[in-house]
Image 1: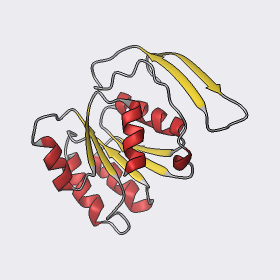
Image 2: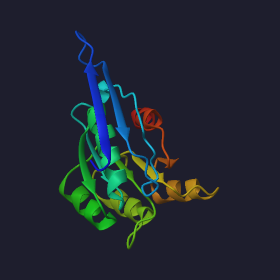
Image 3: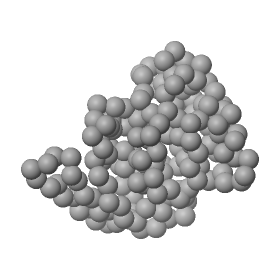
Image 4: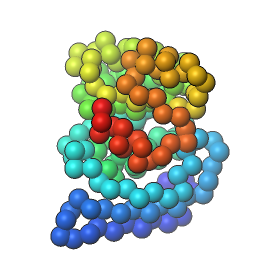
Length: 165
């Protein structure tokens, strides 16, 4: 991971689901997610589930991938909407997390296309985006997303939200 300085990982035994992680990163303004440390508890409901993470900024994709992997998900990443659409055609995902503002096909178009695929009518989709104007949330919902989070995100909020969807 770029600019990744230190990781601390501890598991509390005898319970395999209690997990604490502390990660330290050099702050960056390119990705929009300023995660300098996070307490992450593995989510028992995530085990055996797959997540698709879509963002054209590699740092964001990597950070979300680390977060979801530590929570227990198997993660597939895509750096563009067409790549994500291809992945969704090839594999059934349990949750999809996508940026909105991407070159070419944007996240709104991606959500509409994924909702048309067999088996994706009710798969939870979360927009994680820098779009924060009053009508952006409504546009996300109209496109097919179940939730809209604005960067920078709170890792626990994202994991809690996914569990609720």
